[in-house]
Length: 282
Image (cartoon, rainbow, N blue to C red; front, side, top):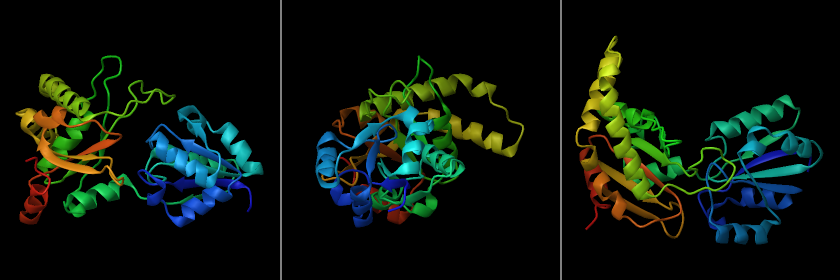
């Protein structure tokens, strides 16, 4: 096999969710690197994978965003970068692909199961009705970003559902110490965003129809945000997969897990109402 970099999607969790092409490519590579800051597998699943394909070394944000060592290795050898989910879903991996091209390193991609496709299919909401995706972040140094809630609000007022991924790095530095956001953290983050957003609504520009719509959307979502209904998707694509339809107020009662995300529905259609009822907490 010619030298180069292979971006390999390993799916959401467990070797059973990987394609045969992904397993074979990883096994045949000279070196294997596991990108461990945009998403995570649990340690047990990684051990099983390592036993199947060979030794895996963990890399973090600096090694991927400034890939001098990675690309130097890929000029002489076949390097497999194992990426949870599907490669190129994150801008980080697109940038790596572009840097490889500039460095004269052949870069190929083997796609995997993405949380984006997995969740929209599993929940039962029409994927034609999903708007812009967002990520709920931890407050860094006391700073609370309101942009995720603004995205949700603008989607919702336009009749669009939102997939919200949850942060896994409280430091925001991507160098280790990850603590995937749990349901209680997500509830705290959303309520904190709503409180801050309410306090700055009067500062919003209303100089265009879209700006007026956005301000109205933000006012609507801040009013009673704790009662807003969401779909909590936990450990999707694994044997511990759970889906729950509940209010923001009830999120803290949910068990911890490995990785979670939220779907915030807009006004559902008749079929979507029936689909959501399946996940209602009894």
